[in-house]
Length: 181
Image 1 (cartoon, rainbow, N blue to C red):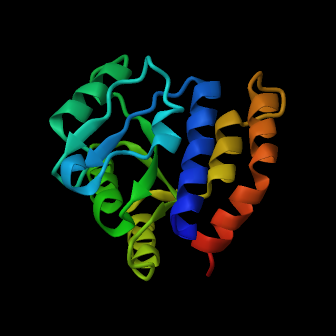
Image 2 (cartoon, rainbow, N blue to C red; image 1 turned 30 degrees about the horizontal axis):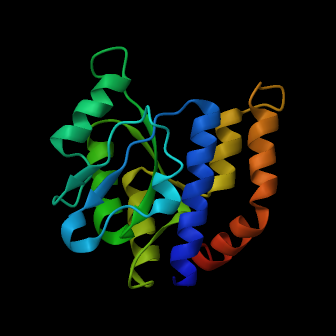
């Protein structure tokens, strides 16, 4: 496994674990699994059984009808806007098209810079800059986790802080790999 892929997986694992702590829904799609492969077991093994099934798609955006139904089930009011954290591959294709579709639907999108990659590394910074210009928040996993908790008095702070401490070396490597200026 390439270093960049391992770093992205480690970041995704951390965010899945944090989502479980914070009771945040986890939605997963694959891009044509029969030809390109399934979501890696390092992630699927962490997904709670209560999470919706992985959606296989051929469209580049995640916002296929099955996923849109899942998003609709997460809202309490019609047209309620969500905050979405995105990780995955290919930053310049699937992540970009998903982000643009979510923004067009009025959702707030956080693209996790240490959790997205591209087979051509030079595509990443171009895509991330574009997504920031389009209105997405491009940030790091650690930053967004503490933003979600918001206060050291939060009941989830200790668990999230512990997760961040437990993964600090992986985070350091991922940020150094993906977030160099």
